[in-house]
Image (cartoon, rainbow, N blue to C red):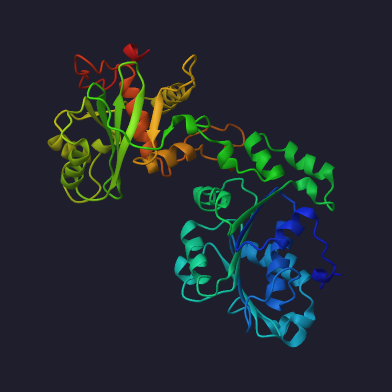
Length: 450
């Protein structure tokens, strides 16, 4: 019982569905104590030992497996000591003993049939995950995206499988976009969600005690139900089909064009092309995501403008900082040479949340038209559409246990910044008849805004 728990493993219904699935990519997003680690451990052992009750052998020869976890300490304690040492019957191991089967130098466990399991952790260099083929890889908690990419590449030649188990308290954005969302349309990916209470071996009072120590409702939902806390912290939860235009149309001439630029000197520059109507609606009809010098990006913007005169060209105020790389001028100054009418969108204490509230207001469905005031052309603005759907709050950390100050996640938010800046600038601005005038010191008149 102590050393051959795989022989006595009786999966509960949620675990059983996970094992029976024939999807090549499987992810168990479950609450604490659901049994994720034992599910993953048994799945790997069954494949390497070629005793899987629901799958044919992954290889005619030895099965090569990889198990990945957060760090070296977790690897030794939770994965090796508490899982595999207790799980695998010794008759399957090389020499029928853990001592003869496990190489501490290579961090690899060898089976009698020639198969093996290598153990790795996410604080290793990404290069360590490259170069070799594997039949099955288990990611215990999600890895950094570059490591996940390398893991997927290791399975390409073997047509292998990847399993992932995690409690999504602070999930990375790629988990939502590459795994959870793709599962809706890709038959090769399947998601399993589980509550902590599904495990019959866990005392419900123990779970209640654990949850009672967590103040944040988003984290509680993740630890109990396996809910993606990043989704629960969406900034624009109302954004959806009512705001999406699937086909591009040429905006009427009397719609005012406002260009938003979120520029960087170390990565791509995001640009949005929005059109304001006379009744106060805004249509984001095109976008640009380019790397290169300012002159090149400005030329690409002019091409997108199609000889149309903009009512305003806006840029992120942070571009007026000292240049990080070659040159003596800030990005803002460089763009100002290309667009003399260039102005900074507002940057005041609290302006980010004021802008977010402005956007939320534009997203609201209004009666009797049953329409919002903000629209995105998904065909020409796929990145704006994606970011609006995924823009989320920074998950709380240990430092937030007494006072959580929610802030937007600063990841893949460039087009959301352009959109927010456009909305904030346009709402108090008279787009028709005169140019909005900005004072040199006070870049945004908050009194007129109020």
